[in-house]
Image (tube, rainbow, N blue to C red; front, side):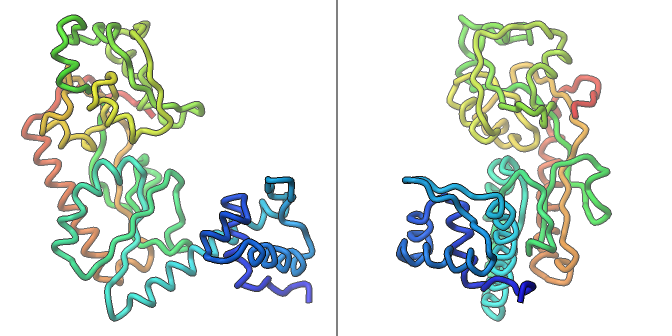
Length: 320
């Protein structure tokens, strides 16, 4: 029967081996023996009639068929796990799954999440931080918080706040008399903390864009420190390793408590904003409704705190 689906119990072994490219690591993750995982893969290949891996000496490589099957298997298992978690939590604790970007999760959402937990102790929040945009209904996710242009927010999206970009550094760096930092041209004395963006996906976080707006497009800094993702840039700035482009309101609390300072108080508004977006079924669940209301209240609170000492902004400029 050529139209039969493969045995579902063979997919976990394949998904783990394809993700880790190792039968040994897959076996350890699944609490099985290596030979058991190897037998599962062989059985799956026999059912499908194709080879899924190329087995080299101390190396494993996906075939074209393996590359085709892996994302489908990963999605099926993710959806099943989410549905299973919800079923098991029914009548006990309620599970709420939230997807957002790594930066928003680490800098804004997680530092505030204890307040939601205190108000809703019966809800377990699961955060899936990832850069890719996930299909909420297909992947079993309740709520997304996305950073995007308004036209991509979808009709269900509710705007939380916009974002501006401003240079920030540690207070100690600002006090260094040997390296002044009173105006944008003074950045020539300092190391710039840069985000690696080979495909120009985040031009609003590019120093070249900010320097052009600041009127010093040809500035050459004392050095550059490039990091693969935005999350470590903020700790690097706090530690005094250089000057970073800070994302307000994500770093507003760090500015308020003095962990970071904005030497020029000159921000450039981006054309994107943060939106909270429920899945089609989320609004039928009280925990999702409560979470969305809480996020919106936190956003308003952050906005009021920001208006207490508004940064001086240059004329708005499209940076995306």
